[in-house]
Length: 414
Image (tube, rainbow, N blue to C red; front, side, top):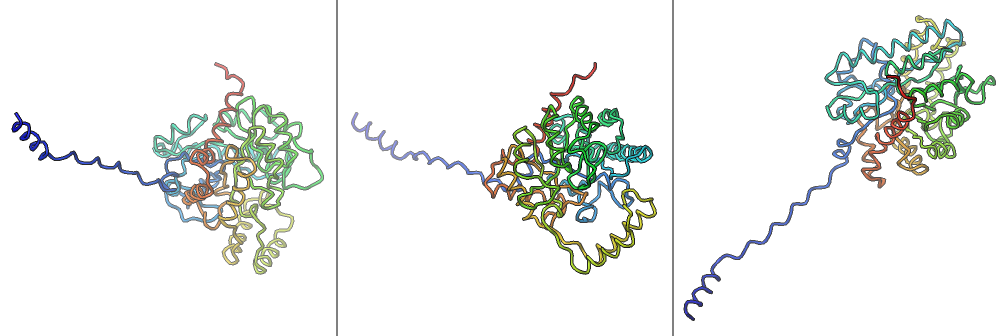
């Protein structure tokens, strides 16, 4: 028995000991670019529809970038991880008389139709979006999200019924005013004496109608008193689709800390722009200033917004000639980040987003077009913001607000 037991022990000792367990592979941390690529990235102010009627622009092509005016097309959106956003119908402010209102209305309807036509021409790449739930669904298919907005309600004339006309055409955000006071409200940049002290009586009706229909109200370009009035009147929080902060650069177009807190306390969202002239004081070279002064003499008393087509074309050509010979000073990505970081410091990541004013004058050195958007995510990660925070900034806050606005709208007839 003893020998049998000894043989068994020897046999057991000759068996191989179990191999030690392989350590579990540790996944490499995601890069900023990978994190950015996983997010739903939306911008609330794309002026790109202004390019749709230009013969040398193709939304499907990788157009040569031009800072401030050619910055968004499908290849650039793909490189920058931009899933879409609000595509703007913008109409410059003009005289407030029946003939001018009619001309502006036709221009706005044409621009809105151009957005529809672009999407219809490329259904494999773009899709119109109407509700807060549409964005994620459309992006999941690989298409770009096309919400629509109106910048400057001047084309509505005095007919509040036009708000519903544009709603039926897909518009889901509306801004009452632009550079100059109009029939609805005071502008931040029109310092004339003839103002309303905020919203006009017609402007009050505009806000009520937007609330009824379920359209977000955009306070960008509005005076502080107008923003105050909108917050007081509106049944839903306010959106500032593209703005800067006064604490970094004291410009009338920007928002101070107290008003920023008021917007946030009401549930609103402040989307930070990248328009250099609102980010910092930009001083032209003496040569550029001299050329601009000469141009001012040539076009004294003439506004390109209201001039005839020949004069407007001549004005634009002269401006392009000056820009080519004496380039305008440019702001920087770092200065843009100052504005965003300050807003985040004051109201936190639940109330800040991105509305860079692409193709409407926005863009800075280091973020010349939308292909550079991953730099924003990288910078926010470096500041210590979480992926959850950054997703809110890129689209979560805006979509949450949009859902609130939808839920507060009057029931639609069956």
